[in-house]
Image (cartoon, rainbow, N blue to C red; front, side, top):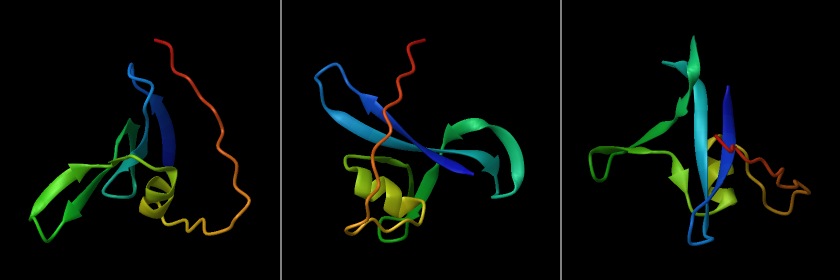
Length: 77
């Protein structure tokens, strides 16, 4: 399972972190930042994006013209 967490930075910019609670796609574990492989650079990166559309694309949801609303969530501590 994957989820998208909206993070507001101290400079008021917003980024979107994709988290997963699976290892290798099927072993349950605690929530952690998902990663993706960039074959062009031959590197693995954390799934942290500047736009909500990029985050949705990472989890396989195409949002072109769809009526999704962003759900606000804050983790205080």
